[in-house]
Length: 542
Ligand code: ADP
Image 1 (cartoon, helix red, strand yellow):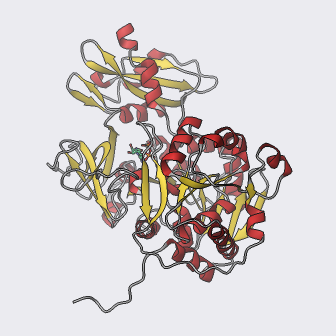
Image 2 (cartoon, rainbow, N blue to C red):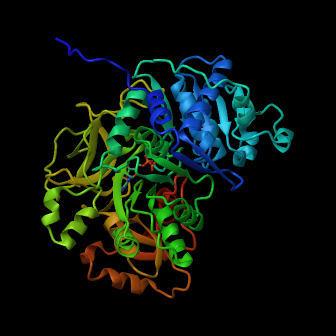
Image 3 (cartoon, rainbow, N blue to C red):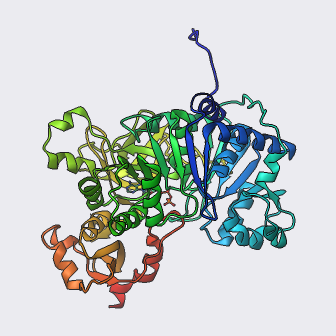
């Protein structure tokens, strides 16, 4: 017997309709590509998204055609997002920091029919457009500009297109399992592969990340997604923001620490989200500008391990509670979020703090396990000690990659994340490493993350990476690559000495290499692959 309740498909258009109806006057602040600010609200965003849906319809596209966006976090991008997915098309967000060859590969692989881009990327688009045979329309996400026409005569302008359309558009009631958006993995560990989200997975993920024990989003908040909309859909925040009706501050192209501190202070941001490298820049800027980041109650750090020293700084200097979260493109992305449970408040401050360093526990909707092998089905103990291959299943977890017929799962239906981790009895996750970054020294595992967390705690070190260098006797040994802070005179011996009372002797890196710049990838993460290529044989050469 079925239940007697209404069935309504879970659709992305429901989110924008809800925000329009119940949070219409809630502010959306947006920085344009030229640095000017636009103040709009959910009602205007919804109306423009319906105008743009009419534009897309006039192009004669078919259901599930792909529409690409190469754009910053700004209000027009947000409108276009809802228009694309809401009207049954697939919003393919593209990372503009990829190499031109990768962009061409991705756009052709996805068969994008329309490419929407911010003016910043005009030279890039002009340089690759001849290699994009499937693209029928190029739209500049801006007002009319004769200078753009000069280098790109066939381009259309977003503002002109929507100006001629009605804001009356009835969102189609498509099936909830229909694809809504497409995002390629950022390729730090190989060729980019497409992950195709559905309306249903997106709406369920939005519920999950909004919960108080999750990213804790509500209509009380003003949220600053520093994480780009092309990095796993800004971790789902533009969808969840419409669901809870919070205010958004969209930072546009300026993601440097000073710009972010100014946005936080001026628009009273309560919660901001980004990868650790972003926060590093922000903390330096807040210190230099003398800002107290008064409005910032919480910040979400994910995408790479958050160094414990960063959590301490936010808490002690800025009274800001750092929420450490774990996820990946294949998991929409949120798979675990660090929030304590009632019983933990009986622990000492130090014990609570220790718990807060981990990547947290899964929200309802996903399940985690650790397994003895990548393809293995033997679940290892959840004792907080035993490390294994982290695997996940749930409502918003990938089943197969875009355009690939075979499923991407283990034989018993779990997705192997490529991470090595421990889980404790309550499901708290500690990522030890990526399986590719682990250092396998004489049959023992050494976690690069653990060594990095120690080194970054040194006051004269700006950023670090530990890589596995090939070793004649031990197979692999850790090598620390470090960037010193500006005036530092620190030496290799000082750093190795710094490790001596913090970790077992055999885990201390064999060598320290100082560099002036660290290689950072398109989503702000350190490119260890590049460092491995450059320094992977230093111990052999020696
Ligand atoms: P890419 O794999 O190209 O870097 P993703 O953004 O999908 O693209 O990265 C997912 C990976 O990032 C995870 O598998 C994990 O290794 C790492 N990661 C994400 N969040 C964290 C975190 N909080 N702590 C440690 N590692 C993390």
